[in-house]
Image (cartoon, rainbow, N blue to C red):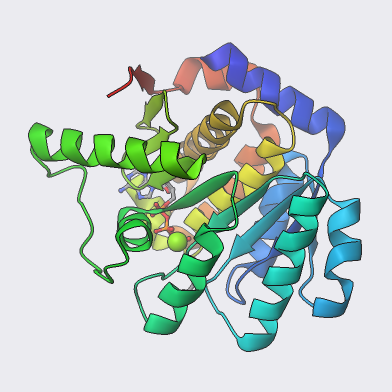
Length: 271
Ligand SMILES: Nc1ncnc2c1ncn2[C@@H]1O[C@H](COP(=O)(O)OP(=O)(O)OP(=O)(O)O)[C@@H](O)[C@H]1O
Ligand SMILES: Cc1ncsc1CCO
Ligand SMILES: [Mg+2]
């Protein structure tokens, strides 16, 4: 898999896709910088009046519901409509989907609008798919093999129904479509001590989706690249502050040799 991942990264850097982000107030700067560091061209925009025009110059759209509001909801609807009309991929990050009924209702509406991919932590993805606002979710690390397998086959059925790619991230990442599951164990626990690491994964995935015809491979490549850059950054960091700085450097420096040396990925067959 390392050569396929490096090939998509090379295509991304060659194409420098414009990625339109409607994201949360917390991570707007860090996700824009991560997109630049990996080789894409970010634009952060949320005025409803310019959504169709902005989508028309972008190659992918990233929607993140971390700090929602009614004006943003209007912008999100307009941007997704434009992306669908223009045949451009869009990715959903249901940030905090289970935190309030408002977010869950918004995310449930967006789920029906055919995202090419959905990236969240286990609680967010399960809340979104089941409609049950639990903050508990699954802990893929501590689940028994049976419980984990049950959840994976449920997720795979839902990915097939929705014709999307589900990326469930955490200590272990699972990238799931109707046929394939990638299990990635790159990354470092310190990454969870920097806000917006997951939002960065989603934003980067927008750029990777724009750089490949295989959405599952694109999402897998994106999550693997972030995990590899993140673990390298963690080794160099004293704590979360310098991790954030090193992460940008490692995304910028990431190359095929590093991917080959560090990739920790297993492809599970159809459940
Ligand atoms: N305990 C961990 N061990 C190893 N890597 C981790 C761990 N926690 C997070 N990561 C890395 O961080 C990436 C994204 O993190 P996570 O799933 O925690 O996102 P999130 O909860 O949506 O974060 P946020 O909402 O702050 O953006 C994962 O894909 C993985 O590479
Ligand atoms: C901390 C926080 N609050 C809303 S969005 C966000 C960033 C991580 O999702
Ligand atoms: Mg998140």
